[in-house]
Length: 97
Image (tube, rainbow, N blue to C red; front, side, top):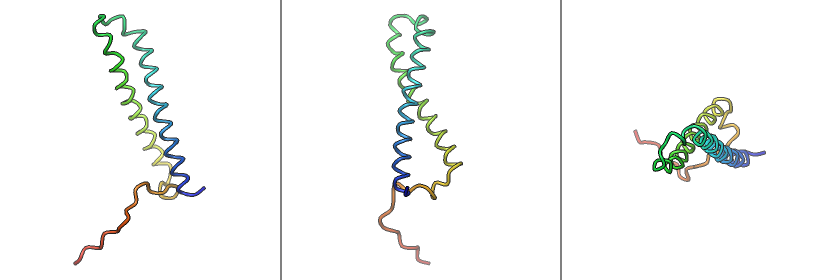
């Protein structure tokens, strides 16, 4: 495989991982909310639980994704296996001295 294919596969895999992490954290938080917290909150405050859990699951998936990417960057030589995503079309001229 070449560097471009590695980059595309990595981005697809990272996207799938991020979505799955968000779904998993959402499901776990909903189960915890339904089993433990729902009974303690009065009826008018129960509607906010879904919104808060949704936002928390996005935050948890972001933090998980970030930790996994940091770990992979330490273990894998990025420049050796992946192409840069954003490439400058024009190089700046060197500064005049």
